Amino acid sequence: MKALASFLETKRTDFPRFCFLSDDELLEILAKQSDPNMIQGFLKQLFDGLFRLELTETNDSIAMVSRETERIDFKRVVKHLSKVEEWLNKIQDEMRNTLARRLKEGNQQFPSEKAAKREWILDQPAQIVVTVDMIQWCSQTEEAINQMQDEPDALNQWFTANDDQLKLLTDMVRGNLSDLNRQKIAALITQDVHSKAIIEDLKKDNVTSIYDFNW
Image 1: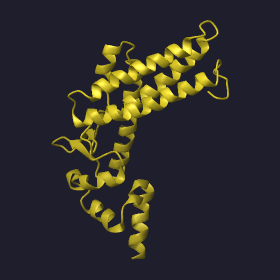
Image 2 (image 1 turned 120 degrees about the vertical axis):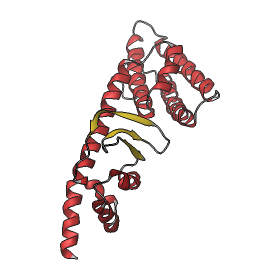
Image 3 (image 1 turned 90 degrees about the vertical axis):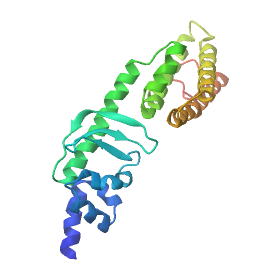
Image 4 (image 1 turned 180 degrees about the vertical axis):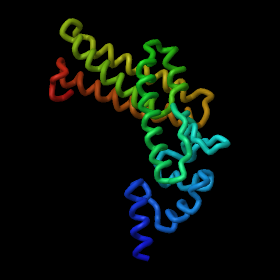
């Protein structure tokens, strides 16, 4: 038993997420490591947002699928490796790399036109939508604050723009959407309501500089 515990500890050292599993579950994974399909059921315990992997006939991983059925293609195919801990580390790396690249692309493609924004929201993965939305909001809020020296009404105008954005999202969520897109937009509405409240506080506090403590 001591030797077995020591062996399992080496596996957890190689892939720390194995700490989320019991010894019996880890042993079952190690016994079935030659067949990724047999260990798909454990993925949701190892990764909070991952429900299953999409595999090719040769057991290579080409996409990740969430519990909400959102599918994101990997930028690079992950080849199946005989050691399950090495394969899962490769999966984890590709998850991060894929999302980092999608985040960069999503930020670059972020539209300024209201009509185009609707399509952008529906086309992008949920994590990219909420993250880019916050990046863009932060950047444009600082831009509005900086403009206040020449245009005292800049923050008010930005508040109105945020209100328009919320109206767009409200109209979208009332429309004919898939469950996944409805959850995505609901999360975005929650975030944008909070962002709008922050702008209102900035107005009340008479913030006119990005170096103001309140900002």
